[in-house]
Length: 326
Image 1 (tube, rainbow, N blue to C red):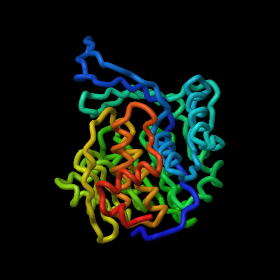
Image 2: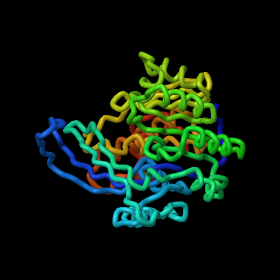
Image 3: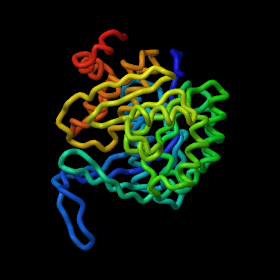
Image 4: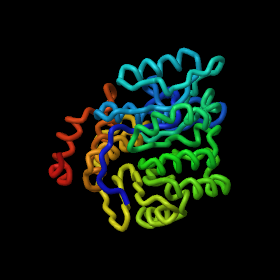
């Protein structure tokens, strides 16, 4: 169970890549055919990138560990990190390697699908975490995200690193993203080992259902908690979010907005929820703050990552739980 604690920073470990997002696509084409979107944008991303940008915009110090290629896209990512006041000392630039890229296809209702070339992410390794352990040890929360996009970090290595962080007193957070192998036996076995060292597991509903085969969010959270994490947060999209923390459960409805683009929404929710944890807020307020941050993000075309004051001001209009916190 997660109780109140003091936090000086959050360490984010995971995938950095470029997203090329094509929006308002009516449907995926059949092989040999073509469909049209109505706009596109190229942004620095990856789960580690989106989470770090979201946290920094909320005023949370971030220690980042990742890698990029030695190319124009890698330089775009490091430049964008600097513009958000996120240090890049833990970002390894790999000579001769290309930066990972994802093509994100966004439907007219904001739902999305992805095609990725991992590039330099194939070479992310446990040694990169060891070499930057001072960034891990300085953090009260250690986040491992985008695990399936850094295949060089095995389940065993990831388990060792999270166990080490827990032993140092940190809360360990995991958000793997979707498994491109569709949650086969190897993945499920590795997840069961890894989850034993996770304090806070934050899947979306599709991922939670795939892991547990449970028919409901409530049952899935219980099954996942039984695998190790004292706290399970499930992001349910248009149905809001749900948390099981020890024996305490609660759900927060979504804020209804016009969805422009949902790519990265779960990571921005994570940033909001983690901000609430750093403040020692009740779980209800953490969910509400995460929902609000994500709702602002998905409804914007530009300047997408929301700032602290606007999340608080907006969220307090819709969530009583936020009106009671500082």
